[in-house]
Image 1 (cartoon, protein in one colour):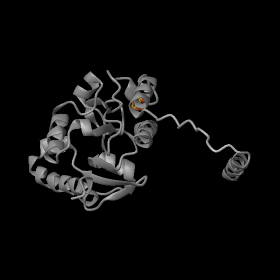
Image 2: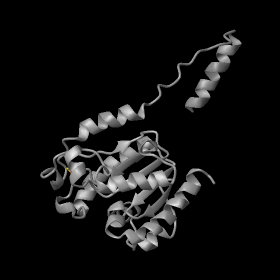
Image 3: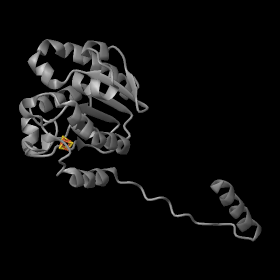
Length: 214
Ligand code: SF4
């Protein structure tokens, strides 16, 4: 209806001798600025009990225009201290894993299911996850990545809403909100069980193949 009215108006302008019109292009959204503003808006969130023991809110970090979004479970001790995700030992391993498939931390955006550290690194509880998930959903809709890599079973069960083993998750890819999604090991699990690194490498190679269309 609106398009028809616009079309008729443009035809009218043409008939009346107006050949050129100038339309101001829509303002480009600056995703980095938008995420920064949202982080500031939310950093005092008290929607769940996890705010009580947090030192720093860990919204997420990386490239807001990333083609690959990595989603983990929640911040650890080092993340809680610094307010950044994946900066501890797990983060260092994740950086190495990315580098093995020719990606750097600057190429990707990384976020977690919950933005505040669960005490003693326990799994986040259902009400904590549901309180926090809207922040992640919003990050996904702003970044609009081409690929998502979910790391760890807790994040996979939460996002894909399937209760199965990590082994079963890794067997296929998923369509999450129209985005091709992979599941692999959380780096902290690989630190505990180094023998799983070769399986994680198989997962990463699948992702690399699609990412670089090899
Ligand atoms: S975990 Fe999420 S919902 Fe809970 S207090 Fe932190 S930011 Fe808010």
